Length: 397
Image 1 (tube, rainbow, N blue to C red):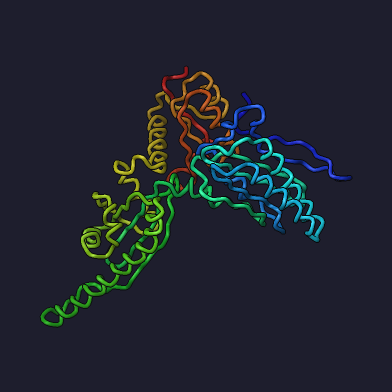
Image 2: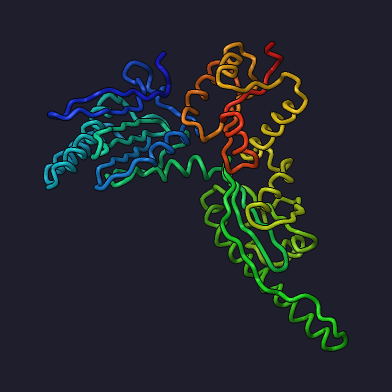
């Protein structure tokens, strides 16, 4: 069977010019159309590559086709667009658009029926170098709209929703004068907003003046909590309404987090999905969010980010014990995979050949965990071990 995902390069003649053409090739004409199906990690890699492509004119084609759409309708639309493109005045732009459209027509003409999750297609030329990219895939979730456009960039936002905004956790760190809002999305931790308010400490005079001053301070804290709640509602409710937000985790120092959760600051819909366990956190900002997520690993165990943290910790533990249960170095990892000895393959998102390692892991029955440099020690793993290592089922000798 042909590789599910590979890049083929060849030289193509254009008049007196020769250019290299890059095609992300799925041999669906020879294999079943199921070979076009990609999982979320493969989709991340495709998105990462597509986002590198920019154009000075609207020559990059993006096409999303939902299931049930007749292929003939799609091909007819593309042919109409090809005819209309004759009106483009700038020759170089016209040639690039027509090349992308011709490629799309060719690919869709070979499809008999749009599959269950729909089809997505990208094609475009780098007008400076002549390099060309063509990608057709079945995404891991259903395409819900018909979308066609040629633009200065590829429209990957609909795919990004499938990858990065599924099973999202809202994060709130709150104390009496500071707060951080964030999201845990797949294997990424995102800081949405940091808030700070000047609220003075306790008054020391005593008597009526003390009580009046304390009431003012309490009102300032109350107003700040309301502000945090309003900002959290604005950030999280749209994700909840889209079915992407699964839970909200709250943390902070001392009693502030309890006062915030027990007060009437968050929308009732967010309160319904609050995780009961409140987390003691010492910091604000990204450091605080990381601390909170690490302390909440038990309740967030199904999140990719947490899984990445746990795998890195397990890898470090075996390293420290020097028990022969880990392997690193490209050749050594590859040999261990071929032996069937790798239980978990750990790969950094920063590597340019992630897809190759994913395919190897699949072939040899290893679980894959992809880590990124935003994770604690993610950068250390990439720089120290070149971003690839394995946790073994048994000592490989």
